[in-house]
Image 1 (cartoon, rainbow, N blue to C red):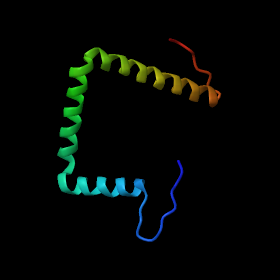
Image 2 (cartoon, rainbow, N blue to C red):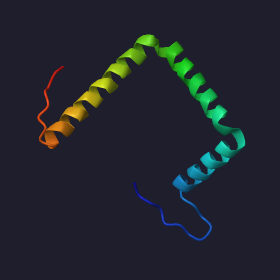
Image 3 (cartoon, one colour):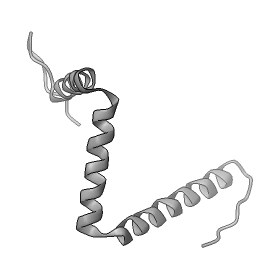
Length: 83
């Protein structure tokens, strides 16, 4: 990611996003993020169905298993390769 040079008083997009996020958190609090997360999850469920969550959950679980096995092999602990 390239960082743009800043002239005095300017900020990067990253800095602006961070400041905006901090301001939103201060104004709206934790419950705000819970609510928008719940609404987003419901929208995805309605649009893609429950099976979508099952599929991505399976993929995520498999990725975690693979990383654990890779870590065990790197530490010389062996590790079985089951699927």
